[in-house]
Amino acid sequence: MRSDATGHRRVLRWYPASWRERYGDELIDLLDDTYGDTPLPVRARWAIVCAGLNERCRDAGVVGATPPRDDRVRGGALIILVAWSLFVVAGSGFAKYSEHWSAVTPHADQLVPTVAFDIVQGAAYVATATCVVAAFISWPSFWRFARREGIGPVLRRVRPAVVAVVVSVLSTAVIVVVAHHLGATNRNAAGPYGVFALSWAALLVLCLGTVVVTIGRVVLRLDYSTRQRRYVSMAASMAMLAMVAIFVSTLVWWIAIAQHASWFFASGVVGRPGISAPMAMVVCASIMLVGVVIAIWGVRRLSLGALGDLLTS
Amino acid sequence: MKKRAISAGLRRSNDPSFLILTSLAQGPKHGYALAKDIEEFAGVVLSPGTLYGAITRLEESQLIEPEPEVDRRHPYRITAAGSTALAEVLADMTHLASVGTQRLKTLTWRPA
Image (cartoon, rainbow over all chains, first blue to last red; front, side, top):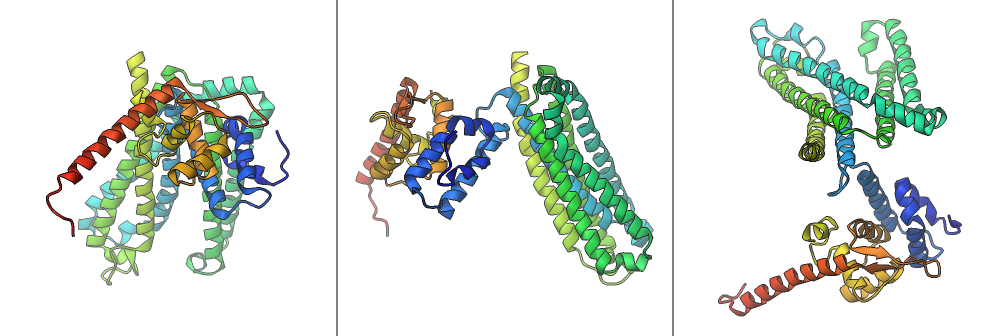
């Protein structure tokens, strides 16, 4: 490791450790030769950030044409986990927004949205269950990893996720207590409670992101057997199908409510003029769409690795 | 060989991988010398991030390999597989160039 007289070495943090170890000094030499003692121009810095993140994605098996089969399966499963985290965010928003929809929808028009809503809930349970199953499948690998690395280093690695979960639970407990001390009118007002609730939601999203990143960083260090890879691939593919079902059913519910009870998206008063494309639904559906695209990309990645396993088994 | 070349990003004349192999066909070079040579013969300025991304892919594909460190520098040289891949891509480009040239010669209409 050479000295960092120019400060150029700081950009290496965008690259994965294995890459830094192999090419880090060379890249710093090139930066020193090209830019001398001056700070890196914004364009060069940005190009390095992009290149570093690209190397991280390759390191995770998320992109790249020729990663080993193990990396492809791990990368594919992690992509689907990221997609599912988007669905958790969008699904939570949808669940909150769609509260009490049946109370203002004419009874004769409830069949289609009810079926769609039930599918959304059922598919969400299925996807959550597949995540739990994938965690169980990964447990022996995680145990081997913990024995190999030692408990201390492993705890350090998972600490961000543990902190995120504790923060989520505590903040949720606080908001539940606050909400119970407020009347229904105050809870729905766009006052301090609204700001508090939004901050809490943003904190949960941040915590979810932290958990997903931590899981990713740990999973990248696990070794999977061929059988484990196959089961993880199946669980992840099942999660992708559940996400597609959630997305399609959400759209069906949206269309049905827009056709028969559009006031739900506006004042909520039966018979009053309504709207068909409320911002909340547009945002939720857009996030879900991005999630579906990411999940399909993940399954494509997975299937290439799993196909290789089948051909050699 | 072609698959390996494609996986290293060796497809178009402005691909960093193609430019690096072309530069190394002249002899071993380190990162800075590569960037300067490519700028000179192709007029393409490769950012350090792009250059080392391409070097990584080419080394993974065994189309180039590092030489022993010289004066803190890490030169790279083209491998036999790299020479073959470069020759194949150049042959493809030569073929395309000759087809294009022939068609231009027999052009019966004048573009506006």
